[in-house]
Image (tube, rainbow, N blue to C red; front, top):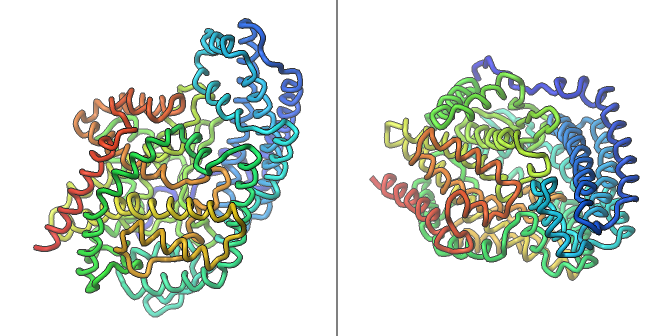
Length: 598
């Protein structure tokens, strides 16, 4: 690959010098510990408000909580970066254990504050949140009180938080460490290559079908060999969550994810109803693509395969230039922000061993920076991933003027800016395409994203929903997990995928996220929501960026239903809203079938 003027590796020293051996970071940890002691003293003296004038006490403790939260986020993001760039960084693992303990104490104290506030007389509460000093926090304070209704006693919540450190959250860390340590052997151009999981997964879009198939089979062999271990990890994570839910009186495992996403069940149900109605065209697309590969049914290892030889083998510098060029056509702030990220070492894209398999973006609220992590392989899919993660970083940037309390947007909105940025780049590539093969190639890439959001994500949702129902009754064996995954994939893809990975439950990291259960439907929500926003952007051009920034800045202080109503004037509890986005994607499927049949 041609050498790039842009750094392939990020700069972490500008945050804390010397990585996991940083004395500066150790001082930061000590500072957080002192802050936690002070918070505990404040919380001990904090009592349920009895008068409207006590609003200042509530504001004071909110500010203190926010300050600690920002410091914790800065520390946790740094450690995440250290472990992502080198899964063998054991010093970073020890630091993570330290900050996890601090985080548990912090969360326990925040819950105590929320429990105190929820006991406020309702009439007084309404007056309190409308005071000048608290009105900016009104939505979050009301959200806190809704959350607090599910909490246990202070003693029990503290015990739960303590157990999470070396139990619940620890299992998620074990999963990430195990996945990063696995090596996969694949023959490429007659040479046996030892690859990380991330590198092996990247081969799913390799132009050689033999390489794709061998990589797929090699990974499946590893998952089969280690399925008992992964089943144990997944069961422990889910088991802890099930038991805590029972103690808190949570009757349905979806209650908490919906609350976290600030979304009504009616909204989720409306989205799935629309999606199920429109799956047939995407099944037809998969069937047509299978025929092109000489198969009767789409082989799972061919799903990400490029249509013909990709004209978009693109080096990193060209990818950066392409992204900046087309971001600039949408808006000056998006382009200038992204250029700043590239110029200042915010991105780690190097393809090397020991890296994490998962691309991500993480924010540093104190220094007002982000870091983007991925493994760049020179394909259009990598360019799209880069644009996607930059979208996350731009969302962090957009929240800059917002008060820290109101910066916490839900997962459903978290995928909006990222998907939007990805759409800009994919559409730009399609517009520049000249030949039939180029158009077919890019249309296929666009449809892969629709299939992932409408079929694969739906399958993940179905699997997780059924898994948790069975986990409530006891341990779910690896063989049973395979059956549940097979059934979910068959239903999600409507039987249009051949030899799907029944071990998807192993290598899909979202099932092991201890902070975010059911991190699946937010992707579909974000994808369809982004389609609506993107349609507005194309209609208004560069003038839309101001409205877009306002939408992103509102994403942390209102429900998803209110956010969409305010900025798009749409009712998302109605199936008709979701049908509009689905119809746009159906046209892509029809265009693909028509173009590929010529």
